[in-house]
Length: 228
Image 1 (cartoon, rainbow, N blue to C red):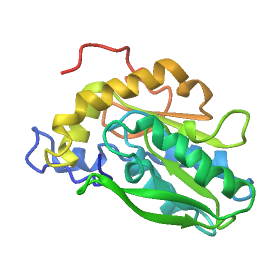
Image 2: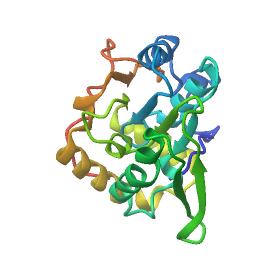
Image 3: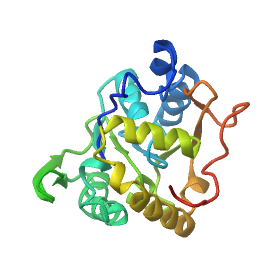
Image 4: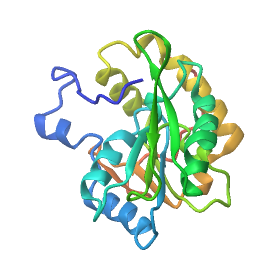
């Protein structure tokens, strides 16, 4: 559960160019996200989807291309209170970060110290400074419809997601993949988050993130299967 995305250079028979494309948002995907937020004063952008789909990479690219004052970016990877904390993180951010910022007050969130497995320092976010991006599994749960937010859903085939997620964390994620997937699938069954998305993005056959639907792209979150 890390925002690091360094893939193992020796993983699989991929070429350097294919590894460079894997998980990166195509120009059309970035354009779709930026268009959805255009004209909204201090927009709230939520980037949600399963682990390994490309959400963190998309958030980085959106922030880099954002016109004018940059929004604050909060990654749920930094907020989850441990491996059982998927839904608790969304509930906490809804109360302490998103609601205050939307009413013009200073919002806050508590980092999770993964190395010590305990709460870390308190972070504060001022309202109105270019807006706010919340990225991570469960991001849509930080607000309740009909709250006005730009909801971006990112998905990829299960095998691709697992490879990306395990490659990027150098083995730290391996023992927890099944645990996290079970939480995620329960969350999806209960809340159907993709149904509220304003923009839906999927992994194309070359690994890049493209607007949905794309020929050959994965269906939005494949049905649950046995976890391995």
